[in-house]
Each structure stands twice: as structure tokens, then as C-alpha cells.
Amino acid sequence: MEDVLRPLIVIGGSIVVTLILGWVADRALRRVDAARPHTPLWGLLRRCRIPLQVVLGAALLRGSYDSTGLDIVDDHHEGIGQVLSLVLIAATAWLIIRVSAAVVESTYSRYAAGARDAARVRRVRTQVTLIQRVVTAVVIVVAAASMLLTFPGMRAVGQSMLASAGLLGIVAGIAAQSTLGNLFAGLQIAFGDMVRIGDTVVVEGEWGTVEEITLTFLTVRTWDERRITMPVSYFTGKPFENWSRGGAQMTGTVFFHLDHSAPMEKMRDKLHEILQDSPDWDGRAWNLVVTDTTPTTILVRALVTARDADAIWTVRCQVRERMIEWLAAEHPYALPRIATTPAPGDNGSSGSVIGRPMSDADTHTGRNAADAERAGAERAGRNAVRDGDGRARRAG
Image (cartoon, rainbow, N blue to C red; front, side):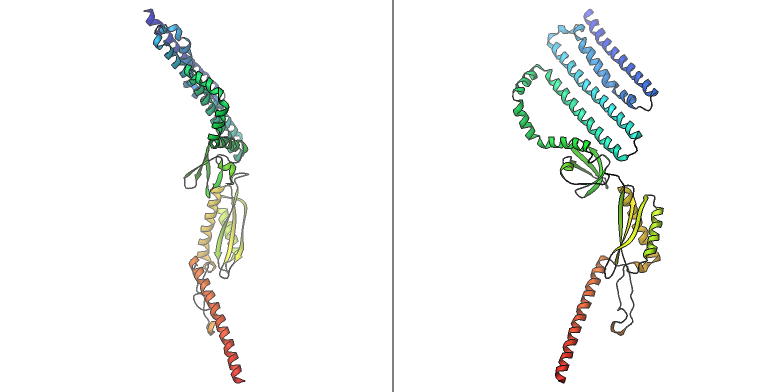
């Protein structure tokens, strides 16, 4: 009877003590969290209740295993002890990861709540994320090594590997050169402040936002919701555009191909009116100038500003749409036109110019026609000179 009651009392007592200690710890954290609502650490630590109970239960069972009297079964004594040791090591690693995650997340939350600079917040977020990943990787490696060392056979293997540690280190370094390069590149990105989570970047001709940074790769979410995954070593070895570094404010341009008779002053007034109606314009700067001319059109550039890349895109589209709509309705003569009848003075006729908006094909066709007309005029002039010379010789 004693052989049955003793294991039940020891095992049951260990489980009860584990549950009681977990409940007490949870109640204490809840009270501290209620007393300090501005510190999220205590509420986040409540997530550690389950791994804490597993650690306590495994430790109590491992420590009291010899008192259960089950060691009379020699065939399973070492196996059960080995399993309890492995569970204790794994649960301890789990608890450490949960605690470190709670501390890191609490630190970032407190900093983000009081910070006013969005760029610094993204920088801290990138750093704490990579720190958390490094801590997790180190804990997992140490826990796995500790679990392997609990096996007697692995100890002999470890001793034999130590003798050739130098050679193995060289071989491993050469084989894992790319992986180690990405690892150190990830740390360099985190603490060098080259790129942060949430930054707007242009890589390989693609525009997007940095969505995730790990120790080995970086994910960019494009405007059309595609994901581009690149090794972090790319950002330390090649140039790229970071539109968020030094501030997210941006300046954009909108170009118009218009007729020479376009009303510039009225267009400036209309541009200012459009920007004042746009909630995405930040009010920093704007202007409208003629930047180039051609025989058929002028190139007008509108300059606008906005708080970030998304807002500048919206402002540019609004300016382009509303300005073209206003020109077509109020000043259609300002849109590019092509001549469809001879101009006044050609062949003694008083022709007119009938216009319509000109496409790229129309512009190309018009230029070809103008070139052909000039060539014909030059040939006619040369023929007239030759005819005049011939008549003069005959008269002489």
C-alpha cells in the first residue's frame, strides 16, 4: 500500500504546489499591473504563467523523483530522470524567451508612447526586434546544447570535437560565409540606422515599405501588396533609396505639355486653389513654371510637397486630374493642338488653325510633316535660283 500511496502523494503534491505557485504569481502580477497601469511590463509578464508552471512542475518532480520509490524499477529509472531533465531545460528556455520578449516589448511600448519623432521610433523598433531575435537564437542554441550534454554518449563526442575545434571552426566559417555575412549585416542595419521597419525604400526599381527585418533577410511590401524578400547583406553592399531617412517629407512634380497660349497666371491661381482643397498637401511649398519649349508645345512643371511618399503620390494625382479638367473646360485653347489648314500667308490664302488635344503620335506626325514642308520649300528655292540663272544666260 505504501508503494502506491507514496508516488501518488509525491507526484500529486508536486502538481498541487506547482498550480498554487503559478496562481499566486499571476495574482501578484495582476495587482502590480493594476497599481501601475502606465507600465505594461507586469501585464506582459502574465503570459509567462504556463512556462513558469512547467518549470516548477518539472523541477519538483525531478527533485522528488527519488522519494517516490519508483526507482525500484531499474530499467526505467534513468530514462524517466532523463526525460524530466530534458523537460526542465526546454521549459527554462521557454520561460527565458517569454520573459525577454515581455521586457523588450514593454521597453519599446514605453518609448513609443513618449517619443515624438517617428523616425526614432522606427529605429528603436528595428533594434529591439533584432535584439529579441538574437536572444531567442542564443537561448535555443544553449538549451539544445545542454539537452545534448545530458546524454552520456554526447559527452564523449563533445570531448573529441574539442580536439579539432580549430579546424572545424575554419571549415564552418568558410561554409557559412554567406550566412554569417547576413547575420553581421543584420546587426549592422539594426545599430547603424541605415534602414528601419516602416521606411519607404526603392530597391531594384521597386518602391515599397520595409515590413520585416530579421537576422538574415529583409521583406519589402510594394504598393501593390507584393512582398520582395532580400538578404540583409544587399543593403550593406549596394546603394538603395531610403525616402524616410532624415524625414519622411517629400517634394513631387507634375508636368504638363501645353500650347504656347496657355494662361500661366490663371494656372498658378488654380494650382494654389487645388492644393488648398487637398488634405494631403502639407503647405510647405508650391510653384508653377515653364521649364522647356518646343516648336509646338511648352513644358509646364508644377511643384508640390507632402508629408510622406503616399501623400505626395495622392497630391500629384489630384493636381494632374483637376488641372487637366479645368483646362479642358475653361481654356481648351491651352491644350496641345496641330494645324489642319494652311496658316495665313501660305499660297495667298487666309487659312485657320483648328486644334484638338495632341497625342504622342500626333506630335510625331506633325514634326514629320513640318520637316517635309521645310524640305520642299528648300527644293523649290533651289529650283527657282537655277531657273533664274538659266534665263539670265539665255538673255545674254
